[in-house]
Amino acid sequence: MNILDMINLGFINLKQRKLRTFLTTLGVIVGIGALSSMVSFGTGLQKNISDSFSENDLFTSLRVTAKKVDPTNPSSFVDSLTPITDSVLHQLKQIEELALVFPDLFFPGRIELLGKEWTTTISGMPSGMGLYRPFSELQGGEFYKSDSLPVAVIGRQTLKQLGILVKEDSNAKDLLQENQDHHFKIVPIDSIVGARMKIKTVVLDLSALNIASFMMQGDNLPIKDTITEVTIAGILDVNTEFTGNLIRGGVIMPFDFANSIPKININSTTDYLNRSDKNNSHRSIYARADKYLQS
Image (tube, rainbow, N blue to C red):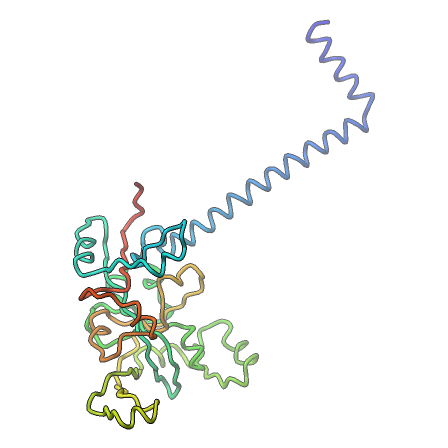
């Protein structure tokens, strides 16, 4: 029996056993379809995640922290501290591939806008961040061009926490109906961009230090409030979960101006306990390259 006879015999069997042939063909088609669907789903999921990472510059940015972690000993995170000093910052700035290098600057503050108040975290960022997403595509206004201007970019979520909804939001009216007890105020973008906002921070007031009253009344601390006024330059709309590591506050200000605001630059007693004995040390450093660098 040659090859042609075997082929003819195969076709004869297919014609005589039509049900089995149909079921076999159907199974092959279903299997190929399922395999193709799985491959397509995996490829699409990978592309969506990669696009989200690329849009938020997660492939081109990193944060250098002072903590040194040993994967085999998680408790070493607490005990091991490598100070990030100005010399480390200077060395990173010498790397040609890095477009931006700056220390993290964030502190608590209470903001007042359009008669509403809210306590949030204020971040200081250089104006160069305006070249990259999401800061290059603000919902309203524009990112600041100078590091010393008394301006700020406020997040849309922070406006919502203040009880302010932007009229241009597609779901503003729905949120107003669903949360009538929150007394939301719907305003146009123009009434936010260019508006004056007050920022209240806390500073030491050694002149008010009274040891006797301080020992008797624990709430009589030697501190006082200070007010700084800024102009809203833009509204940042962040609707992705991938930017949480970059945007730590509801208000972003020029780095030099934010650094000059009088404040107690600690968020909690943990910051004080974890402080370094080195002078000019930083919590962490943010570094960004213009393109993805492969080692």
